[in-house]
Image (tube, rainbow over all chains, first blue to last red):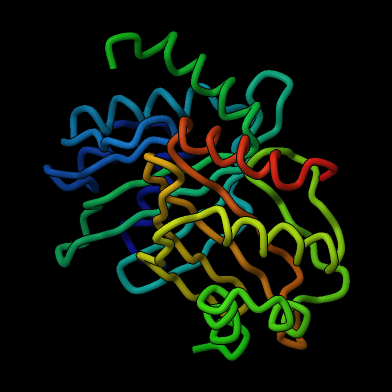
Length: 125
Length: 125
Protein backbone atom coordinates (compact mmCIF):
# COMPACT_ATOMS: atom_id res chain seq x y z
CA UNK A 1 0.00 0.00 0.00
CA UNK A 2 0.98 3.60 -0.54
CA UNK A 3 3.03 4.93 2.41
CA UNK A 4 0.80 7.99 2.89
CA UNK A 5 -2.25 5.76 3.12
CA UNK A 6 -0.54 3.52 5.68
CA UNK A 7 0.13 6.60 7.77
CA UNK A 8 -3.49 7.73 7.28
CA UNK A 9 -4.73 4.39 8.59
CA UNK A 10 -2.42 4.82 11.56
CA UNK A 11 -4.02 8.20 12.23
CA UNK A 12 -7.50 6.67 12.08
CA UNK A 13 -6.39 4.03 14.59
CA UNK A 14 -4.57 6.30 17.02
CA UNK A 15 -6.13 9.74 16.51
CA UNK A 16 -2.63 11.20 16.70
CA UNK A 17 -2.73 14.61 14.94
CA UNK A 18 1.06 14.59 14.47
CA UNK A 19 0.55 12.02 11.75
CA UNK A 20 -1.74 14.42 9.89
CA UNK A 21 0.81 17.17 10.26
CA UNK A 22 3.24 14.87 8.50
CA UNK A 23 1.07 13.62 5.62
CA UNK A 24 -1.05 16.69 4.74
CA UNK A 25 0.27 19.26 2.30
CA UNK A 26 0.47 22.77 3.70
CA UNK A 27 -2.14 23.99 1.19
CA UNK A 28 -4.45 20.93 1.43
CA UNK A 29 -8.08 21.52 0.52
CA UNK A 30 -10.82 19.87 2.55
CA UNK A 31 -14.25 19.43 0.91
CA UNK A 32 -16.85 18.70 3.58
CA UNK A 33 -20.13 16.87 3.00
CA UNK A 34 -21.97 19.98 4.22
CA UNK A 35 -20.81 22.98 2.24
CA UNK A 36 -19.62 23.50 -1.30
CA UNK A 37 -16.67 25.76 -0.57
CA UNK A 38 -13.55 23.87 0.54
CA UNK A 39 -11.66 24.71 3.71
CA UNK A 40 -8.02 25.42 3.01
CA UNK A 41 -4.85 24.73 4.87
CA UNK A 42 -3.37 22.17 7.15
CA UNK A 43 -4.42 23.58 10.53
CA UNK A 44 -8.13 23.70 9.65
CA UNK A 45 -8.04 20.28 8.02
CA UNK A 46 -6.34 18.72 11.04
CA UNK A 47 -8.95 20.27 13.29
CA UNK A 48 -11.83 18.87 11.23
CA UNK A 49 -10.35 15.41 10.77
CA UNK A 50 -9.45 14.95 14.44
CA UNK A 51 -12.95 16.06 15.44
CA UNK A 52 -14.79 13.82 13.01
CA UNK A 53 -12.82 10.75 14.10
CA UNK A 54 -13.99 11.49 17.65
CA UNK A 55 -17.62 11.79 16.55
CA UNK A 56 -17.80 8.50 14.66
CA UNK A 57 -18.32 5.30 16.63
CA UNK A 58 -17.32 1.83 15.40
CA UNK A 59 -15.55 3.39 12.45
CA UNK A 60 -14.16 0.93 9.91
CA UNK A 61 -13.22 0.96 6.25
CA UNK A 62 -15.29 -1.43 4.14
CA UNK A 63 -13.87 -0.89 0.64
CA UNK A 64 -10.70 0.70 -0.68
CA UNK A 65 -10.06 1.56 -4.30
CA UNK A 66 -6.53 2.59 -5.21
CA UNK A 67 -5.49 4.67 -8.19
CA UNK A 68 -2.03 6.13 -8.66
CA UNK A 69 -2.56 9.46 -6.95
CA UNK A 70 -6.23 9.13 -6.04
CA UNK A 71 -7.85 6.83 -3.55
CA UNK A 72 -11.43 6.11 -2.55
CA UNK A 73 -11.79 4.74 0.96
CA UNK A 74 -15.33 3.76 1.87
CA UNK A 75 -16.19 3.57 5.54
CA UNK A 76 -19.04 2.57 7.78
CA UNK A 77 -19.63 4.11 11.19
CA UNK A 78 -22.30 4.89 13.74
CA UNK A 79 -23.48 8.28 14.86
CA UNK A 80 -25.81 7.86 17.81
CA UNK A 81 -28.34 5.25 16.72
CA UNK A 82 -27.77 5.75 13.00
CA UNK A 83 -25.43 3.77 10.80
CA UNK A 84 -23.83 5.62 7.93
CA UNK A 85 -21.52 5.03 5.04
CA UNK A 86 -19.14 7.54 3.67
CA UNK A 87 -16.23 7.86 1.33
CA UNK A 88 -12.89 9.63 1.69
CA UNK A 89 -11.67 10.74 -1.74
CA UNK A 90 -8.00 11.47 -1.27
CA UNK A 91 -5.56 12.94 -3.76
CA UNK A 92 -1.83 13.01 -3.16
CA UNK A 93 0.70 15.26 -4.86
CA UNK A 94 3.99 14.27 -6.44
CA UNK A 95 5.74 14.48 -3.06
CA UNK A 96 3.27 11.98 -1.58
CA UNK A 97 1.46 14.51 0.61
CA UNK A 98 -2.32 14.81 0.62
CA UNK A 99 -3.36 17.85 -1.41
CA UNK A 100 -7.10 17.24 -1.58
CA UNK A 101 -9.45 15.49 0.86
CA UNK A 102 -13.14 15.17 0.07
CA UNK A 103 -15.78 13.46 2.17
CA UNK A 104 -19.28 12.35 1.21
CA UNK A 105 -21.75 10.60 3.49
CA UNK A 106 -25.05 8.77 3.15
CA UNK A 107 -27.88 8.43 4.02
CA UNK A 108 -29.36 11.91 4.46
CA UNK A 109 -30.59 11.50 8.06
CA UNK A 110 -27.16 10.36 9.24
CA UNK A 111 -25.53 13.24 7.33
CA UNK A 112 -27.81 15.62 9.21
CA UNK A 113 -26.98 14.01 12.57
CA UNK A 114 -23.28 14.27 11.76
CA UNK A 115 -23.69 17.92 10.81
CA UNK A 116 -25.38 18.73 14.11
CA UNK A 117 -22.67 16.98 16.09
CA UNK A 118 -19.84 18.56 14.12
CA UNK A 119 -21.51 21.96 14.48
CA UNK A 120 -21.62 21.55 18.25
CA UNK A 121 -17.94 20.75 18.41
CA UNK A 122 -16.64 23.13 15.76
CA UNK A 123 -18.93 26.08 16.33
CA UNK A 124 -16.73 28.72 14.70
CA UNK A 125 -15.91 26.54 11.64
CA UNK B 1 -11.10 0.52 -19.59
CA UNK B 2 -13.35 -2.17 -18.24
CA UNK B 3 -16.05 -3.08 -20.81
CA UNK B 4 -18.91 -2.66 -18.33
CA UNK B 5 -17.68 0.83 -17.48
CA UNK B 6 -17.47 1.76 -21.16
CA UNK B 7 -21.09 0.71 -21.53
CA UNK B 8 -21.98 2.67 -18.39
CA UNK B 9 -20.43 5.80 -19.89
CA UNK B 10 -22.45 5.14 -23.03
CA UNK B 11 -25.61 5.02 -20.92
CA UNK B 12 -24.72 8.33 -19.26
CA UNK B 13 -24.22 9.87 -22.69
CA UNK B 14 -27.32 8.47 -24.39
CA UNK B 15 -29.76 7.78 -21.55
CA UNK B 16 -30.62 4.51 -23.29
CA UNK B 17 -32.07 2.16 -20.62
CA UNK B 18 -31.36 -0.91 -22.76
CA UNK B 19 -27.70 -0.48 -21.89
CA UNK B 20 -28.55 -0.73 -18.20
CA UNK B 21 -30.61 -3.84 -18.86
CA UNK B 22 -27.48 -5.35 -20.35
CA UNK B 23 -24.89 -4.36 -17.71
CA UNK B 24 -26.87 -4.62 -14.45
CA UNK B 25 -27.10 -7.96 -12.65
CA UNK B 26 -30.65 -9.19 -12.08
CA UNK B 27 -30.21 -8.90 -8.32
CA UNK B 28 -28.28 -5.59 -8.31
CA UNK B 29 -28.53 -3.54 -5.13
CA UNK B 30 -28.86 0.23 -5.35
CA UNK B 31 -27.84 2.33 -2.33
CA UNK B 32 -29.29 5.82 -2.61
CA UNK B 33 -27.89 8.93 -0.93
CA UNK B 34 -31.21 9.35 0.88
CA UNK B 35 -32.08 6.14 2.68
CA UNK B 36 -30.05 3.44 4.33
CA UNK B 37 -31.91 0.43 2.97
CA UNK B 38 -30.88 -0.51 -0.57
CA UNK B 39 -33.37 -0.94 -3.40
CA UNK B 40 -33.09 -4.36 -4.98
CA UNK B 41 -33.43 -5.60 -8.50
CA UNK B 42 -32.81 -4.47 -12.02
CA UNK B 43 -36.18 -2.86 -12.80
CA UNK B 44 -36.09 -0.52 -9.80
CA UNK B 45 -32.43 0.37 -10.36
CA UNK B 46 -33.04 1.18 -14.04
CA UNK B 47 -35.95 3.40 -13.05
CA UNK B 48 -33.85 5.33 -10.53
CA UNK B 49 -30.78 5.69 -12.74
CA UNK B 50 -32.72 6.85 -15.80
CA UNK B 51 -34.57 9.40 -13.67
CA UNK B 52 -31.49 10.79 -11.96
CA UNK B 53 -29.67 11.27 -15.26
CA UNK B 54 -32.64 13.38 -16.39
CA UNK B 55 -32.55 15.49 -13.22
CA UNK B 56 -28.85 16.37 -13.38
CA UNK B 57 -27.75 19.18 -15.69
CA UNK B 58 -24.23 19.57 -17.11
CA UNK B 59 -23.31 16.16 -15.73
CA UNK B 60 -19.67 15.17 -16.14
CA UNK B 61 -17.24 12.83 -14.47
CA UNK B 62 -14.28 14.61 -12.87
CA UNK B 63 -12.26 11.74 -11.37
CA UNK B 64 -12.29 7.99 -11.89
CA UNK B 65 -10.52 5.48 -9.68
CA UNK B 66 -10.36 1.91 -10.93
CA UNK B 67 -9.87 -1.19 -8.84
CA UNK B 68 -10.32 -4.72 -10.14
CA UNK B 69 -13.99 -5.17 -9.39
CA UNK B 70 -14.71 -1.84 -7.72
CA UNK B 71 -14.77 1.61 -9.25
CA UNK B 72 -15.25 5.09 -7.86
CA UNK B 73 -16.52 7.59 -10.43
CA UNK B 74 -16.73 11.13 -9.13
CA UNK B 75 -19.05 13.50 -10.94
CA UNK B 76 -20.04 17.12 -10.93
CA UNK B 77 -23.49 18.34 -11.99
CA UNK B 78 -25.99 21.10 -11.48
CA UNK B 79 -29.40 20.85 -9.94
CA UNK B 80 -31.23 24.14 -10.45
CA UNK B 81 -28.81 26.81 -9.29
CA UNK B 82 -26.73 24.51 -7.12
CA UNK B 83 -23.58 22.71 -8.14
CA UNK B 84 -22.95 19.34 -6.57
CA UNK B 85 -20.39 16.60 -6.54
CA UNK B 86 -21.15 12.96 -6.11
CA UNK B 87 -19.57 9.58 -6.41
CA UNK B 88 -20.79 6.37 -8.00
CA UNK B 89 -19.29 3.41 -6.17
CA UNK B 90 -19.76 0.48 -8.51
CA UNK B 91 -19.01 -3.18 -7.88
CA UNK B 92 -19.06 -5.77 -10.65
CA UNK B 93 -19.42 -9.51 -10.23
CA UNK B 94 -17.29 -12.23 -11.81
CA UNK B 95 -19.45 -12.14 -14.95
CA UNK B 96 -18.78 -8.41 -15.38
CA UNK B 97 -22.30 -7.29 -14.47
CA UNK B 98 -22.91 -4.60 -11.89
CA UNK B 99 -24.00 -6.17 -8.61
CA UNK B 100 -23.82 -3.13 -6.36
CA UNK B 101 -24.32 0.57 -7.13
CA UNK B 102 -23.95 3.17 -4.40
CA UNK B 103 -24.31 6.93 -4.74
CA UNK B 104 -23.21 9.68 -2.37
CA UNK B 105 -23.62 13.39 -2.96
CA UNK B 106 -22.36 16.63 -1.42
CA UNK B 107 -22.97 19.31 -0.28
CA UNK B 108 -26.04 18.96 1.93
CA UNK B 109 -28.18 21.67 0.31
CA UNK B 110 -27.74 20.13 -3.15
CA UNK B 111 -28.49 16.68 -1.73
CA UNK B 112 -31.74 18.08 -0.39
CA UNK B 113 -32.62 19.72 -3.72
CA UNK B 114 -31.91 16.43 -5.49
CA UNK B 115 -34.10 14.56 -3.03
CA UNK B 116 -37.03 16.89 -3.63
CA UNK B 117 -36.71 16.59 -7.39
CA UNK B 118 -36.33 12.79 -7.29
CA UNK B 119 -39.31 12.58 -4.94
CA UNK B 120 -41.45 14.54 -7.39
CA UNK B 121 -40.54 12.22 -10.22
CA UNK B 122 -40.49 8.90 -8.34
CA UNK B 123 -43.34 9.45 -5.92
CA UNK B 124 -43.99 5.77 -5.11
CA UNK B 125 -40.28 4.88 -4.77
